Amino acid sequence: MNYENLSGNWNYPNAIRAGAGRISELAEACRSLGMRAPLLITDPGLAALPMVTEAVQQCNDAGLNCGLFSAIKGNPNGENVMAGVAAYKKGAHDGVIAFGGGSGLDAAKAVALMAGQDRPLWDFEDVGDNWTRVNEAGVAPIVAVPTTAGTGSEVGRASVITDDANHIKKIIFHPLMLPGVVILDPELTTGLPPTITAATGMDALSHNLEALCSPFYHPMAEGIAVEGIRLVQEYLPRAVRDGNDVEARMQMIVASAMGATAFQKGLGGMHALAHPLGALYDAHHGMLNAILMPYVLKANKAVIEARVCRLARYMDLPVTSFNGFLSWVLEMRQTLGIPHTLEEIGIDACQAEKVGQMATEDPSAGGNPIPFSAAQYSAIFTAAVNGTL
Image (tube, rainbow, N blue to C red; front, side, top):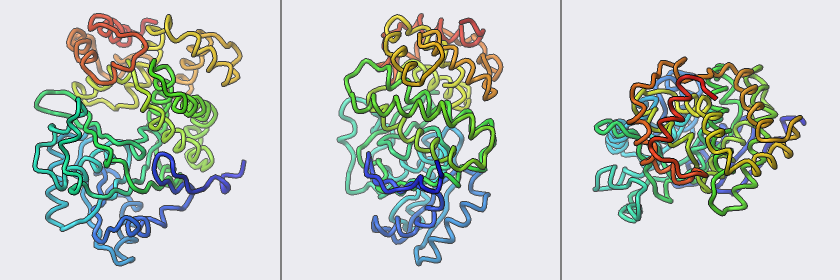
């Protein structure tokens, strides 16, 4: 397929402009949402790159008063969000450009939410009907521009923000956090190094896979998840092998958006463990999901086997059993250079009991096919530390 044909305008779940070079439409996208003075929010690493300088310049050349904020961590916390709100107000901004990977997108969406709120950030944690507390008139419009193919936060209505005081990741949610316009431009992802391409791509796989295996009823999300997994199967190795393969980058950035669209059906044990581990060890979220994946799959085998076998047939795997699919996951990780154990990224089992308890309290645990106890999560975590499958 010619990658130049991989472009279009979609309206599911939000307005998406997909295709190479479409970052050129950023200023117009901002204007379409009524912005005159957007604040571009990204991470410090991207802020130093030409793509961000050029994005800000494009907006300013178009007559927009575009500012830049980049004081956020790899796992953004509440302090980062409120610092962004202060910058938003100081610059008299009227909208947000969420630019970057998961950290930049999540922080930016939370800033947009908090720009016009009187309550503290944590009052909007995704628990019960907390979202109804939001002053909707105070939520800023958002244009989202992902630069990695992993989180899919550009098509989501929530942000994962670390509560440093309690060493826990919390999900902040409101329907108006869904960006008004998304620009999926694969050329913005070509500079990602192979390691980050692999980790973020496996994150996209985890989103699609956990959505597929979630016990909740949402056939549309399930269908999206199946095709998202196939795209990862076909294109992630290519994107890692050749970062300038624009077709592979395009298909992966779409697979990422598909995963985040599908997981409205639910996530599961991978994320229930990855969230506390990210909060406790400040580890890369995608890498955590990549390492945890086979251990969580095996623990859920009794419930998900038939569904995984159906998936294996769709993927045209040589062995269409649960073990055949698990072998594919292990082979994919080895091909991409993903570590087999958490120990290899500096995580030991000394906090196994705490991790297990935190996993049961994570919202993602509610979508796991089996309602694991704290002890069972501790055992899965320990197996992932030691490499015991």
